[in-house]
Length: 98
Image (tube, helix red, strand yellow):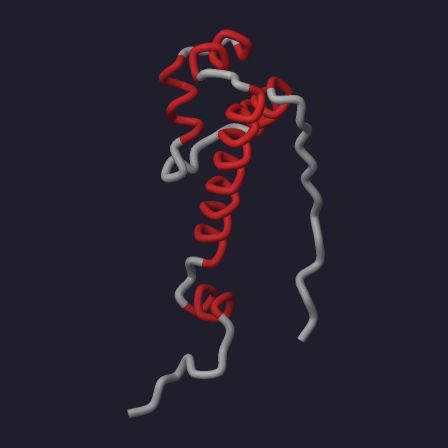
């Protein structure tokens, strides 16, 4: 029995399955939510206080911090980062050459 993925990278597997972009964006969102949650803990900012500072609802904060919810606007990410004293940097990069 031969495994067609033996020796290939995980990224290559995701691309072959046509889920690379979805998986990557989901992973980025999970990391951002974790980073914001950690910064909130560090600065002792509750979800209620976060919502107040962002001029939104606590349920919106819950959705934002939910690692499974990938539907978050860039504006929301930037506002959340600002509340915890961080900034967001987005760059376009060329893919690695083979």
